[in-house]
Length: 208
Ligand code: AP5
Image (cartoon, rainbow, N blue to C red):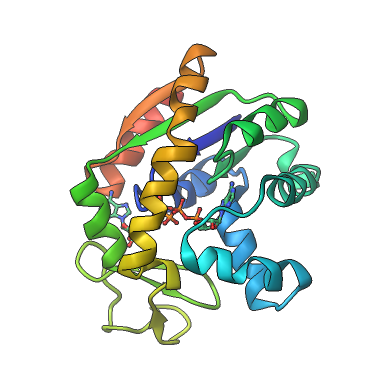
């Protein structure tokens, strides 16, 4: 099963992708996570994209497309995948058509007010990428990762200025993909406003 998770920043794509990965045993391919791993490891790619991610702008299409093409060519993606955060532009969607056949595009639907609450309260473990929320999914000990014991951080792009830019970029460059995939009969809306368990249960029903 080849899935795309489409939706605004903070809609819960990564949270639900982790649950789908576990239940369906398919890899969760997040372009944001791939870029962040490159930044952490100080690769050439990481150095090139660091400031772009911090500002909330998009990494150029050709760089992103090449990275995803390489990742989809790995063995674990042969029997399915969840693509989270890709495509984000029409050019990326056109490129993906040449790389792979998509089964469903899940469109995470969430009000702006809830998006802002989710992003401003998000905290992550830098080394594992595990995600928390100070109100909706707090760690057992405030500010500390449950498993590694490391301090949690706020992503640079979860600061107010970057959040507003990311939402603008989403509206301009990514939201047009809703019609793109609707016209191709692949789009399914998912109400992302409920608890992660409820959203996941609804998605499982859809995928049956
Ligand atoms: P990326 O990492 O993809 O960021 P994003 O799309 O903005 O998505 P997020 O990770 O912010 O949100 P999410 O929907 O996964 O929400 P989450 O589950 O964490 O991209 C980062 C950057 O990389 C981009 O800005 C760009 O620069 C670059 N990039 C990436 N892909 C690119 C591409 N294709 N082309 C060009 N550039 C690209 O949840 C958010 C919070 O809410 C968490 O705290 C969570 O605990 C909480 N939460 C989740 N679900 C629920 C729920 N149901 N109820 C209550 N709380 C919840």
